[in-house]
Amino acid sequence: MNWMNLPKFLSGTTFVLTFTLFIAQVAAQDLQADNMLLFQRKSGGWSKQYHGKAFSYNVQFSDSLKADIAIEARRDDANIDNHSTTKEIAHLIKAYHKFKNPKYLAAADNGIRFLLKAQYRNGGWPQYYPDHSGYRGQITFNDNAMANVMNLLQDVALRRNGMDVTDPALVAPSSDAVQRGLQCILQTQIRVNGQLAGWCQQYDEVTMQPAKARAYELPSISGSETVPLVKLLMSQPNPNKEIKDAIHGAVNWLKKSRISGYKVTTVSAPGTPKGIDRKLVADSSAPGIWARYYEIDTNKPFFCDRDGIKKYSIEEIGYERRVGYAWFGSWAASLLERDYPAWVKAEG
Image 1 (cartoon, one colour):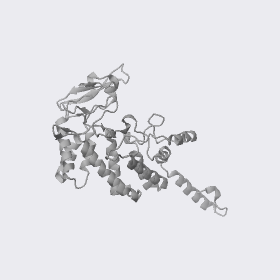
Image 2: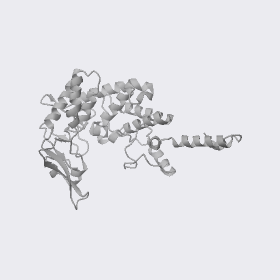
Image 3: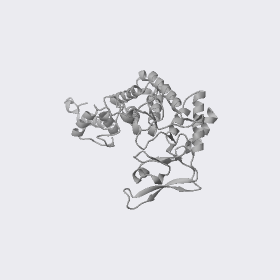
Image 4: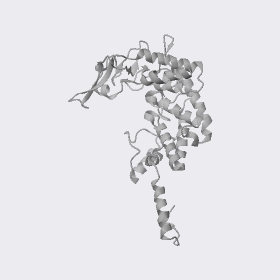
């Protein structure tokens, strides 16, 4: 609507009303959604960084920055790390429901198409697409990347959680992608002495074996990444025996791997780069925690610096990694105490 071109015969009252409606229409936009349109890559996905740094969508960008962002759209660095792409799709869908801006829906649909294109035939998703250099091409469970993708596509396939407005042509391929993703999850579940356990953070995209990513991310069973995969499996309607066995096996491993009588505490450390340090301390009242990495053969927790040398105590690694990575967490607590028992009652 161009209020400057209104017919001259409009009365003052009508003009004011029309102008007010125009201003309301302009204001009724979502700044973050508009910025997501700017940052969307030509591939359909989004990057987690702008010029190598994290950024906020809740910023009014200048025209010169918008021009630079448009150039960045040609890059092949779209990814699913740190909620990238899934976060944008979900936000755009919510914004579309509120503002009915067709650009938001079109961008979300293209984001979903990106996720479908990025999937390997074996059902896994790489961290980046189409850039598969280094560990970017590995099947990535790290930081819940693949679980986030599958949860979103499952919503698309089932037309739920607001995804009923997406292109109907995306329903069947999304359903197929979820099924292939489930087979990948089942195939990559680690067995130790014949018993199903948890999952590694990342896998070789060809052999589907646990793989090393960054120097300190060694092949292991993860006390963190295993949890969202179990929850994803538990969300499946009418689970078959293979899915049930995978859930029970992973939960048994999580129960066995709980570290009781200890907690991680952050302490003041004057003179250090961040002024704090992290320590594992004994506490008989602590509810229990899990290590990020367990050795596959021994189930022994381990830690690692950027030199790639495995250590068996958090105190043995350098300060930078000790305070800069989530080595312990209560990741499985709610799963074991609430979610799994409820699932067993309903399905197990």
